[in-house]
Length: 165
Image 1 (cartoon, rainbow, N blue to C red):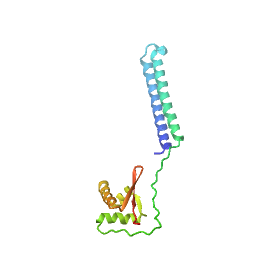
Image 2 (image 1 turned 45 degrees about the horizontal axis):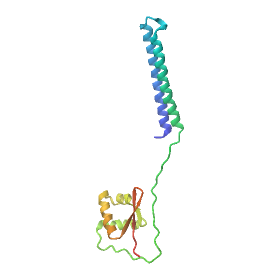
Image 3 (image 1 turned 90 degrees about the vertical axis):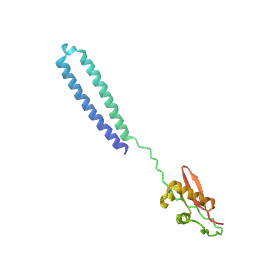
């Protein structure tokens, strides 16, 4: 939710609370006027005045908070995943030998080739429609066969296809 919307909501709530406090104040004054035998010198009037100013001060603080929220610009942290493409070396490359690979291993290699030889592990997991554990084990096998390499980037791994030289 945007700060401006939250600010308006808080201002609305403070106005409602202020109205309730004033109605409560009028009701208390009526009750004290009907029951107090001292008249206008009754000490209950002082207590009512203190309670009213206290409640209206709290309402004013909430109201100001709403106004401040409306005009504060939120800190924006937009993180976009960029498609990472590793440039191929200009040396002669041997075609990858996919013989002896399991079906899932071949799919990973083909997907990496299709995506520019590199992609985030989470994206690979999503496109392969596999769980985290199965994907990790599959990539471990391919890494052991020296067909791929995983590079750590913050909290993510980038899976890079190793091309034969």
